[in-house]
Image (tube, rainbow, N blue to C red; front, top):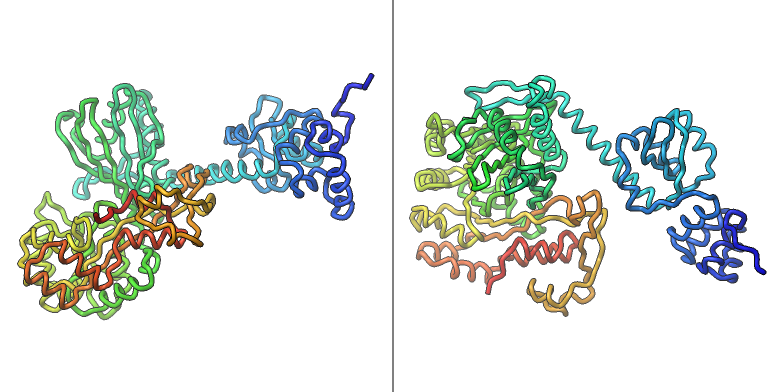
Length: 574
């Protein structure tokens, strides 16, 4: 009778043959290769493709009498336990601390026979290691994510150790301490919850925070790279405390729950200042809060970093160097219009010219530029500011947004009297921007005379570099984006698989797509004749304008973004 197989008294090769993972010929080839390379047999078999990393982990566990751990469970490690082991030591010995008790610490290791590492662990933690076996690649992925989280939380703690919150407007500003030990015991959980929401938003580069009451929960979402993502769902009983805390910080009326309210507060930290604009809206389930986060630290963008293609970059750079005229950028809220104009100012500013801006609010602070923030409560509107600026001898003027006829009229006259004017308008595309100015009340002959360039733009998410992979798009995808399969042949199309670096979205960061109408004599003539936007758009396309959709397709072929993202962000002409 055949003796029962005992893996703890068998060699690696024998166990693999017993499990039918390899055969004798594969084992012999691996042994021959191992004698030349000097590496372990398991590693040789894995590198040759005969077995997978999971196979190797299973075999090690069986041979040495240890438990194997699945990759998913590595990511569930307690961060407080993970940080007990310095990252350098963990990576050197390919191990990860998972959990601990009063006397033991559970550790995942690639090589559970690494006695030097185990001995050092005992001395380091004063605990007895309980070893489980994990694969090298799985350990590396888990260490990347978990130690990255530890670093990020440390950065947030460093930021929040030295922060001050200035509540209300500048004219009645008051410093508020966010520390839980400065408030009453019953309020402390709510203070911690508000702090946690703000910390997470800042850490994840969010531009907006939404606190939305539902029937049984409060949905807290943050906007990352233009898309909302849920970060927590506290119970509905927490809503009243959350809203009241935010109202106190914003100097709003805590007793008023029936009407919308708007307020603000500022988070100040070392080398950083974040302006938080608060909007509160009554809904059927309670008050909804939206907080817009504006990082007022020094502006660091330039035209090259915005995402211009070379042909568009050349046109735009040439136009903003003109001594007078008007450049208008359009797009919806959050499409990067102000960033583009700031980058333009960054490009042209010099000692020899006086640049002044009128904004609501000032989103970034720029050296060498005179920035004015409007204040409607005291009568400092766009039009009132502009009338005063006329006496300030400006060469270049940036108007945050043209909202009404008076502001538009001043901007146009400014550009016609030897000044260069930059501004934004809410419109869907470049052609409709021109007709929007006409709708506001500017005469056609003035619009045609003052405009140098009109640019529409959108921000699209860029594919995460950590999980970027090529794939073959379906016929339906190509039809939706308006691409002929023959045009895609031989080109690589990419998408993001999703990883911890991008919160499993497949995207990290954003870039711009643009649509430029250079005001040629023909197009100026159409504006003088009060032509509709379809006629202007068609003529611009004939003169070489690249539409937003076509510019997005360029980004797809360049591997910067995906088909899905361009479909989400642009509209196709029918």
